[in-house]
Length: 244
Image (cartoon, rainbow, N blue to C red; front, side):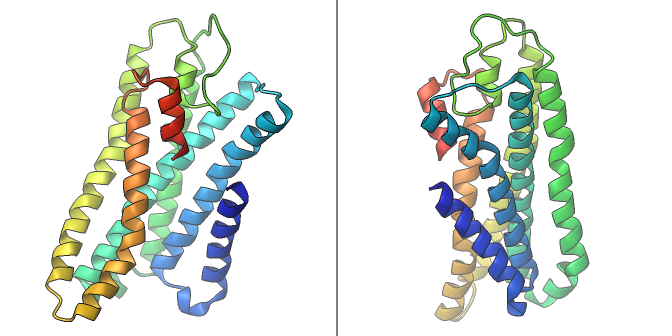
């Protein structure tokens, strides 16, 4: 699965870069989404595979903090990038005559840059605060990578303020973009249904279908994990949701 994920996303980047016909905003967003997926996978899976194959399940304090930082960074960037992609589809389908002026190369570049930069302060703030706490008792992380919830389980001091911050951050980077995406797709579906040609409706629908599936899987699982950081979730359930 690791090789399939890496190969698939690399092929998306290579094909979209090599083919001049694909030098459009939609494929520029898609290339960056594939790049985020590659980086997120490299941040977690190689270490996980090493632990499974060598049965050496050890990670240093600094490495754990770094892994958590990049995990939050890439998740945040992907949230905003999926929102940008939804806006791109909204303009393309609902306002096709204004598409080249609203989503030109300059606007596309600024949107992608903003999506990448948005993850930096959030991930730095959450990681720095979390790892400033004193750890006590067991040092065993009940997870296959360093995430907020399993690291919180190792802290014995009061973390209610931090959990409130995680909740606010999750609402900001998960629920608000999800609502914006939902509103965009309501208008997209309305516009598709107004199209006179069944072929046009089918084509417009299939340009959005893959993105809709990714949005549902990504936002629902991310919200389930982080809306309740010190969760009542069982550890096994948390792992299962994280894998999906």
